[in-house]
Image (tube, rainbow, N blue to C red):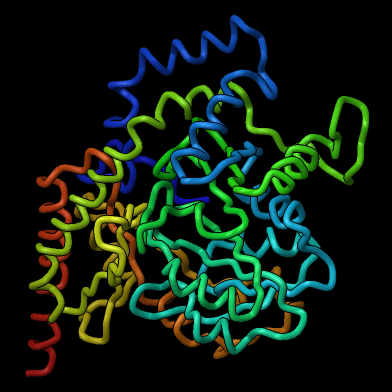
Amino acid sequence: MHDSSLSGSALVPFVDFTAQHQPLQVQINQAIQDVIQRGDYVLGQALVEFEHAFAHACGSHYGIGVASGTDAIALGLQACGIGAGDEVILPANTFVATLIGVLRSGATPVLVDCDPRTALIDLMAAEKAITPRTRALIPVHLYGQMVSPRQLLDLASSYDLLIFEDAAQAHLAECDGQRAGSIGTAAAFSFYPSKNLGALGDGGMLVTREESVAQRMRSLRNYGATRKYFHTDYGTNSRLDTLQAAVLKTKLPHLYTWNCDRYRAAQYYDALLRPLHSLGIQPLENHCGAGHVYHLYVVRLTDACPLDRTALQNALTDLGIQTGIHYPIPCHLQPAFKHLGYEIGDFPHAEALSQAILSLPMFPGLSCEQIERVVAALQACLESAASACIEAQV
């Protein structure tokens, strides 16, 4: 779902799994061998243990492992009773998996704009979009920062809405004293390799406090069967492999420390980037303090920036700094979703951000020296461009 390419020639890669995997290599290998020896590759012991451990870590009761974060949304909404005839509100500023999940559930997606300061869903815009058919609201905890649980719960209770969290980028994120996955009826997570808790391939999970939702989700992921060869739902084949669960279970106890490492890196970025605000580099705001788990560290190029984003990215690449864009085209402007009827200008904040954001390197183990290199490269590029602009005006 995100940039997964690594470059050995880059001074600072966008993502580097080395610091996570090298110290755990023996344990990961043993976990995989244990599954091979048991031979329970599908719905096996390691999956059951990981489902329980991850749900507990999120402050929830039940975890149901599936093949991807997209399936966790699509099947999860169905498990919550959302389907044809229901409207589901979600932000235009999200990865397309959120929207695809709603469409696959049979529900009607209703997109709304985002808060330009944080890139999170604008809850005032969401409230204005509520109709008698609105059944659910999907807050996307984007980039590792949660949408305010207090505000979400106030809005949901006022309009009797189901909260379904998209927490694909927010493993163990916290806000208002609550963890991602513990606010609504259910929450979807992704274990794509670059996530804060990543598998060695695709994977996802639904967490929920409601036993009935968990039971239906287990059925939906396994051909709609409540027991072998007895099918009560029109389900599918979407099961988190036991081998992947074994790897994730091995990594889970280290997730909090890795998240703290990301937060410390973000704080250092914040400090070093302050002098560059006048040159047009503005980090997105953090409204959750240490609860922000910084799946991505995203800055916004303001009007004061002397370079356009493409030129800046290219210049940074030449200096050995890898960057990303999350995301360059909002959901409502993707060709696949023209049938929804949205047009350019419908969500101005999401559209403006899509043209102005840049993701800087962020991963556990990112050193202070690497962060300094990133910021020094940014400063060099911007100051050179600013000087060129001044000379051109003289």
